[in-house]
Length: 203
Image (tube, rainbow, N blue to C red; front, side, top):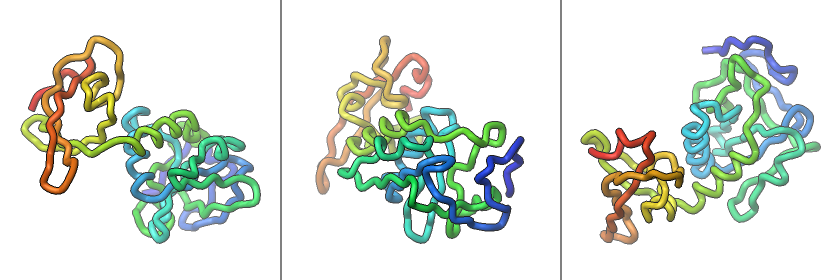
């Protein structure tokens, strides 16, 4: 389904097409490999209320392209994580805004219909990448259902909310989370939740 945009940005390609666009003109792009990119987008979605900014997914190569303001991708990139900045002299395949099905080059996070010029905040992107690169997958029970969550050191130590990562007081008991630390070896941690997420603290 095509997006209805108030005023499509100048770089918007025609519907039903994929157009090669030079980075560094209207935006830079940070290329992130699939698994890291999907986890990072999940964190951004949670922290921005599903207003992460535009992200393109090339399902053939597995790369995700986070569109950030021009001249910011270089500072956002982290070679240790395998992320790649794309700016002037490099090109990105940009799908038409109707390309949202996960086939070929598509939008995994389309531009916001009410603010199509909004881009991914580079500081939020860096924070999300760093968080995802240092977390472990943990299991907790929420409303009787087992869910997997990404938990960092502070969250596993109970010093930050297991849901939103805030360390602001007050924190409340949030139940037990379980982390697999080796083949057949698991460890339980007592999690905490902030007041805003207190309703999710117990299964």
